[in-house]
Image 1 (cartoon, rainbow, N blue to C red):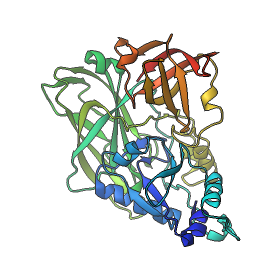
Image 2 (cartoon, rainbow, N blue to C red; image 1 turned 90 degrees about the horizontal axis):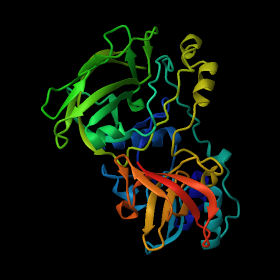
Image 3 (cartoon, rainbow, N blue to C red; image 1 turned 90 degrees about the vertical axis):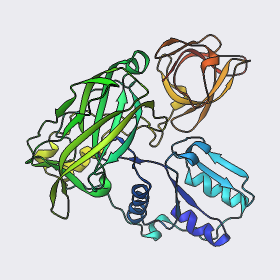
Amino acid sequence: MEAINQDYAAKGVQFFYIYKALAHPETNGYVAPVTLDERLLHVREAQAKLGTKITWLCDSMENELKHALGDAPNSEFILDPAGRVLVKRGWSKPDELRQDLEKLIGPIERPTTIASLNLPAQKWDRQVATGVMKRLEVPNQFRPLIVETIKSDGEPFYVKLRVEAEPALLSTGEGKLYLGFQLDPLYHVHWNNLAAPLKYEFVASAAATVQPSAAQAGKPEVESDGDPREFLVDVTLLDRSKPLELKVDYFACHDEENWCKPVSQSFRILLEVDQDGGTVRRGGNSNRQAAADGPGSERHFERSQNRPSRPGSRPRRGTANLPENRPIPGRIISIDAVVKSITVQLSDGSEVEYNIGDARLMDAEGSIQIEDLRERDRVMVGTSAEKDSEGRVVVRRLMRR
């Protein structure tokens, strides 16, 4: 993309990167900056590490631009001077982009090569061990909730909190809640395992009962690490209109500046599904040997590179043609109740139209009707091997997440 920018910027083409969210490079976990200032810091960090010359646009905290552009994870658009969309893709493809610009504007006599750009090739290189804490096994159907920050004793939020709810909690008021405390890589901090471990405590409230209402993380055998601290708690909601509040205390150490200090942060958890929360693939504990190999070692780096990619990363081939009975995740982008069909945007950005006339439709509360579906609903589609007369794939079951 940088090479294309260099070639066509001289012809008056303006390129933009749109910043939407951050994926934690070590844990495959979604981490959202909590303030506009932090979001801008992440943009500047990315610009410096990538050495990019392309202008960055920072989306609003409500992700308004992301929604307006269709919510695809790596979409690409070409607009004319009047703002009309000439080309759009659910997944950016530089080779095809260059071909499009050649048709619209003209070819480049001597195209810039990537090698000639001398871009920095910086890898994620945390100076502490990872893969030393056993990850919790959380079912994939847990749904992310909206989390707000309250205070942090004047310190940056070195730790970001991801909260996910069991479907039963949202439907019946009783169920489990996942708490994942992840270090923000922007600040280059790690856990200090020689000090007291991370501890959380829910603020007593008439809104809910939480068990355990307070707990502390385990201590790995290494002096420091960068793994998330995870908990599962049982919740009974008494008034779901009121948020849950919790406080977390931990010791943070800076990777390069050689300081360690206690930090307290407070969060507010809303009992509302975060439509921008994405999903997380939690890896196993296969990297425990990383501590013995030593941080920064070649063997340690190879392990981190072999971890499964997070949802929303570069698509694998054949996404739209998964075997029968294997559920396909996506988001509804249009509904035709007359012909009983829906169009779903898959994780690779492609769009597939499905026939749901004979499908069993469900959500966490039970059976639903096609009239209950809404655009932007996240769904899991169970297809058959059949197609209707219009070429639409026939759906046997659909679960709204």
